[in-house]
Image (cartoon, rainbow, N blue to C red; front, top):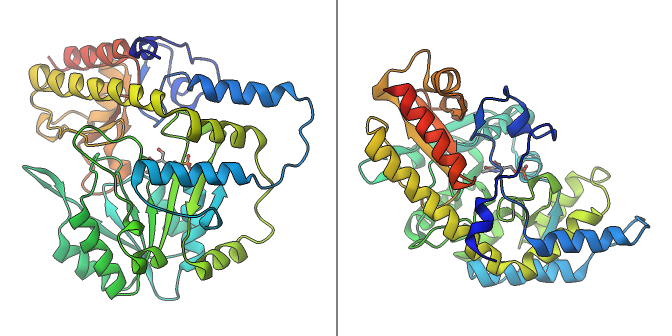
Length: 382
Ligand SMILES: Cc1ncc(COP(=O)(O)O)c(C=O)c1O
């Protein structure tokens, strides 16, 4: 497959798409984190093949699928896990709520690093847990973890820490040294780690995703890692995700906590995931090349045409976090770009502190769409 396929403009309007159907026709949506690209051909073929069999009865566990997941995690992330450690789930957000519910402790709070993907805040509400927000620090080198502050907050009564790596919205891929320090702190204070690594396959040149659980046996035993096929292969509507839980006791606790509340295998999602993890390596290479070029186009455009907006180069994800504070846009950048540029972004305020005066832009779209959106934004500013 060649890169130019990602240039294809696929009409997603009037298809019940959250991204494309919320705003009026004239608005270009660069918000919700799905991409405007077709799913890889092997996934479509695998689903078609399954549909060609007309009976959709109950399916049992699929050993080949679990094997494919383990091979993928080892091939791409150099982490050896076994099929018995993998639990299939129908979503990373529901997975993190499940983890938080299972491992919450009386009097202990949920720890997160802000700004962060909005459903993280909801987990505390859903599980009736207090919330501790450890803000990332904006420096000249990009977003960094203030470890003194993190440790102070972690030691003040955190029970579960939800790590977001790669980080949505700031696009950081945490280094081994950073993950080791985070891990040490969590082990020291007995904090269970829920690692949301849904964006782990979307990493650009010069960076390597590392799963925090892969760093040591202690961390593996203390961490529930959540991954998915959804972001990587642009199939989030199929709701295929999984947890890696190396510790048997933790696995049993998770299963017990959800006894009777999870269903049977999802036939089409499983067919799609098996094709994704066995036949789509080349497609992913092409996708990453296209996204990286989009990222560079975005960075260059902002620098040349909207230099008042501060933006750090995303190391991974197809999301960019735009600091518009010096522009003083009224009533806020999200509303401004929606009304004056007809471009829908995510409102930074919904990502917590510091988020006021920021917007998140999704560049997982054909270059022409990105270019049009950026030109509209620049024209609205000048
Ligand atoms: C960090 C992060 N976690 C989870 C999700 C959603 O996962 P799911 O659709 O599997 O619930 C997203 C989607 O944007 C995300 O960015």
